[in-house]
Length: 516
Image 1 (cartoon, rainbow, N blue to C red):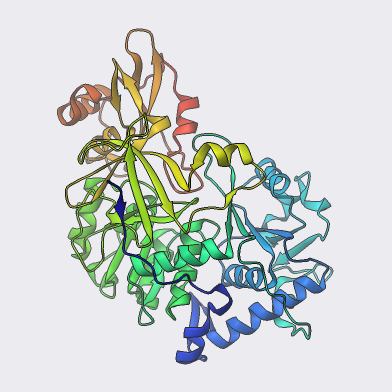
Image 2 (image 1 turned 90 degrees about the horizontal axis):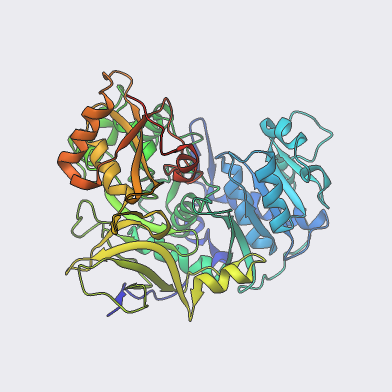
């Protein structure tokens, strides 16, 4: 029987996104960084100005405008302006290099690009960035000859704004590409409205909160958390980077009540020599998503803060899918219960629901689902059937309806006919005091089908164990699933979503490669 979350009364009206904040305190801070802040009134004016001035440049509703931006207040202004103008915001990961930038611009058919001035050199190497129909807008530019974001957001416009089609595409976000080329996930104002309502309800946000998204605003997680917070009148803290120094200062000065963060950033934060319990005193909730939280990291976080990590699960295609209820029971190791407004089904390879406790592929149905992959009907049909999205993720549910992530369908290692989830082996490796990060992949093997190959990095102050010692340590925890080979790396590759990039590790792995 499908698992169903609490019903949602209505989506967030994106046209009235800032209404609650304007009504409760128009001159109080809405957006805050270390060193700057913007009130609700100023944010509303800047978004309206930018929307009108973008249309004045010649853009029309439905045109795509890409952004290559680090975390800045201006990026949220840009998103709100695009929604008001009926423009389609195309989010590019700030780590993208020229070939990736070109692919995203080509796939989306972007007519304009907003980019930070520090990326000028990379954009000069792009094949398409200099040939867009309406050119580029530069953020924090130091040359008057270029179109400046700051000028467009500051100059009032007398022209009225259109009424956007709520069912048309409003955002295009690219997947991390961990299982193939990145696809452009499309969301409409309507699906985004439901997605924001689900996030606000699932995180139990209110106007009394101060929210630190703690992740990139060019990904759905950071975008959804920020806009959901604004929709309920909550203040948003914008971290420009995600190193421990920046985040600790944001915690100390901004005093957030809610922190959203990725496991890699949380690890750096918790293990910072500067972090003390008092730094986390303002928090009522810490939500960690994007990848499984290692048990050792969860224990260290609780020891430091006295809080439990609230794990959640989501996808670019659907937004928030599951979360441990903030005011209810938090089960460590579980990604929580079904998110508000969402229905889930765990199925076997024949499409039949599996018994409670058994593993299967997770299917999702909600009003926040993507409206499709941009210009890729084949991928859309292959992923969405009858209103249900095939996530490709392996899950199981307990009797209380709590979900447990067991791995990606495409990343499962098949050893002698048995399925091995990379995450389970990685977690065992991370229990070793010396291991900082771990990634596990399968490599072809004539005898077993696939064998387990692990990659690890070692903590700076730790003595590196031998490969055999680490294999035995892991075997004591996961038995036959332990790796046969371990490669020691200086730096672990991470995907644009902050996950261990197993695609890169797969390329690095070879049957005869080893290190000791």
